[in-house]
Image 1 (cartoon, helix red, strand yellow):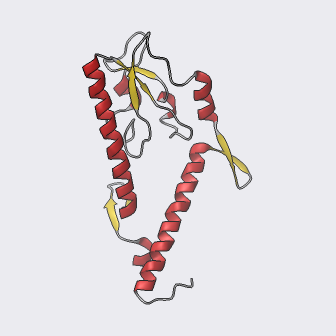
Image 2 (tube, one colour):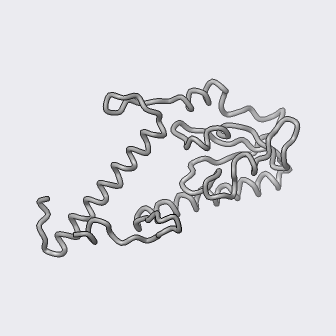
Image 3 (cartoon, one colour):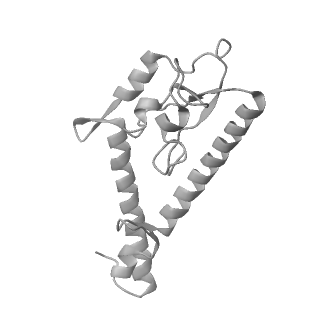
Length: 173
């Protein structure tokens, strides 16, 4: 029953966190695709001589990603007008822009030609977005974390049922 409930972990990290096979595959596939797109954006910017990029933005962003989403950054270090892309976003780190499970990306931005994709009003609204869950108003990010926990539990229960059925055990519980 324990094996059916817990499954076989595909990854175990130094901090003790474990990940199931389906979670590890999902995270690595999404992260890999996003990182490939990001590298292409950097190459595209370099080829075009573009020195600025604008990050994407979305509701329910991780709290540590909110400060830099929808902002224009310099690829050549901090300038008088723009913060350094790599330092401000943590690009290239597991927890930064395009890191593990990050849904953000960025695009070339040409000063004087490009228009910002998001107004300050839109960015503020994304940051402040809330939903009602069990009669309580919570932030969109918190809501997505609750949803992901529910989804993990459903997968665990399905795994447990399948394992118990395979072993000829009672699944009524």
